[in-house]
Image 1 (cartoon, rainbow, N blue to C red):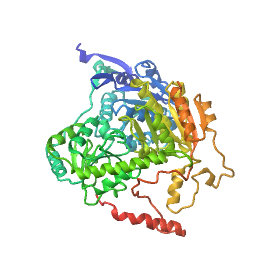
Image 2: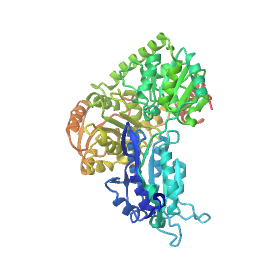
Image 3: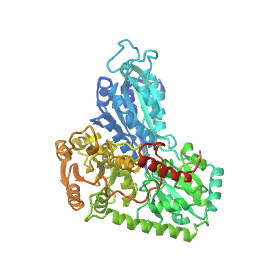
Image 4: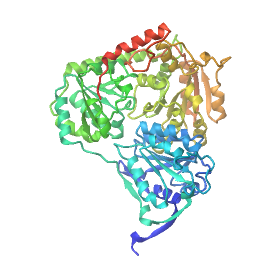
Amino acid sequence: MSQSDKTVRLTTAQAIIKYLAAQYIEIDGRKVRLCGGGFGIFGHGNVTCLGEALYDHKEELPLYRGQNEQSMGFAAAAYAKYHLRQRFMFCTASAGPGTANLLTSAALAHANRLPMLMLCGDAFLTRLPDPVLQQLEHFGNPTLGVNDAFKAVSRYWDRISHPAQIIQSLPAAISTMLDPADCGPAFLGLPQDVQGWVFDYPISFFDEKTHRIRRQLPDTEELADATSLLRTAKRPVIIAGGGVQYSKAVAELTSFAETHQIPVIETIAGRANMLADHPLNIGPVGVTGSNSANTIAEQADVILSIGCRLQDFTTGSWTAFSKDARIISLNAARHDAGKHQSVPVVGDAKLGLEAMDAAMVGYKAPAGWTKSAQQEREKWDKYVSDNVAHGNRPNSYAQAIGVVNALCDPQDRIVAAAGGLPAEVTANWRTLGIGTVDVEFGFSCMGYEIAGGWGARIAQSESEPQQDTIVFCGDGSYLLMNSDIYSSVLTQKKMILLVLDNGGFAVINKLQNNTGNESFNNLIADTPTVPEAFGVDFEAHARSMGANAETVSNPAELGDAFNRAKAAEKTSVIVMQVDPYEGWTAEGHTWWEVGTPHVSDNPKVQAAHEEWESARVKQRKGV
């Protein structure tokens, strides 16, 4: 019998886990396991078969016990982001509500183009015991269930109906998760009976395999069109997105910008592509950006977008750029490269920049343009320095950010998401280390902060255990999802968590007020169904989950507490109240399109609508 004819009899669940354990990836010349392990909550839909299989591989694929399926998915997304999409974690959930809880985190991973494998229980394929516990019945379509909802939030979706199916499905799922152009979550529905069915699998299916991330060279004609246009630029600017980091093209971006003296502005996802003090780093662009970046974006005649998906917070709902400006989009994904009538360059950012550099020999941006951009950055730096300073004024997000920025290690990882903190971190954080900022704004998902911090810390402890993971979190997000404080203490994955309490959903209250509306149902004090508002004792709550915790009154005390947290060996939570109305970063914002009432009996709402709409004349009408 030849080697290719040899087989091994395994259950479907055993084969899935055995296959995952045999997958490796080469990263910077070093072979490591592709799947870093998983997050799991067991129920009747996955414990008997998948649980049995995982137990036999608990050393190769460590399983972290989750507290909530949604937060498991957030942790897996943060893990993948830290590893620049080169490694992933799986999430396993039982049938029914356990699986349904993963929908939000799957959407987050999809929006952010992050790999995550979901192994979720499903109804019995035979239907002999139907209807079963936690099954949704669709009377006209018995094949339809909760797991079908994941089709909208997965890059790859399959329901395993026979053990042999995984011979095709598993490699396809992994190929999708590692594809630079189509990266995202993969979902495998595992019917409870099929998990335990057996098949004689080829032994060769479980041979060790080493993967490599594909790097696509740009088309020569697309490259020629792009460089020909860029050479005509009198006021060029580079928008650097998250794809720069995923391609490991930071050095190429910096070299290209320096060689051609082109100013660089950053998206939220690309916030740590360049250090804050680099002379060509002009700041973050867009709705949550900087005056410096937005000023030159508006004046630019040619914009080179690298690794960006050009979402509305980057483009100011397409008002941030001149209507006459030309856009070149270098992107691994065809869909992103062609947005808004861009001149597309479909390909890897690293190889694309190298090729563009070779074709741009002799070109430099006019010195006066570059100097004016740098002068704008100097003015913005002065604004930020004043904005983060504390003294005789109300506590603010910006002040807390400034305190941590001054005291943290350059390689500490910063995590924030949703609410007011993404804007405040993006505008006020001065990047100290490349790739050290994770502001989740692809799906703008509250609840990511603490779970994402835990996932990032798991990843960070694999390579940089001496560095800290620092999480900025509002009180609203804390109350939404906080149980991974307990997870971090249990697993000894230390985080430093700053809970900045402004008494509710203050940033949405700000938007409510800015559109002429009265404060209503956002701040706890303005909620009509609350007879008597009171604050949460976040310190006591965090202590109850095993963390160190303390409450401080002002930024000076915050600095002392932060130093104590740095010296501590386990997760530390620092709580500080901030003002819900005062201290917001007031500069650096482009227009953002939101739906406002076209008619209202409230004159303030009507006036705000008219003022809001007045900026629409600047909006590009690209496709």
